[in-house]
Image 1 (tube, rainbow, N blue to C red):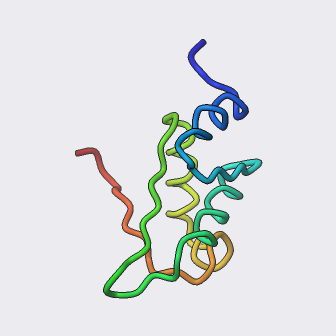
Image 2: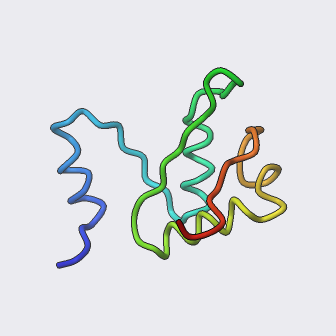
Length: 87
């Protein structure tokens, strides 16, 4: 199979001591990620890495680029740096 279930991924991460959080959809996952990330500062900006399918990354990118993103999707966070073109 090309995809693992959430349970399989959780079981694989358990021996590493990785903390796992599950969200119902990309917007909820992004909001959860921002809420779990320590408050950023100029010296230590917040960093959230999104990996997964092209569809997931595209969905997150769309949410972050929307005009409502800073107010509705995330807690108060500095402007995200989002690649807008292809490398």
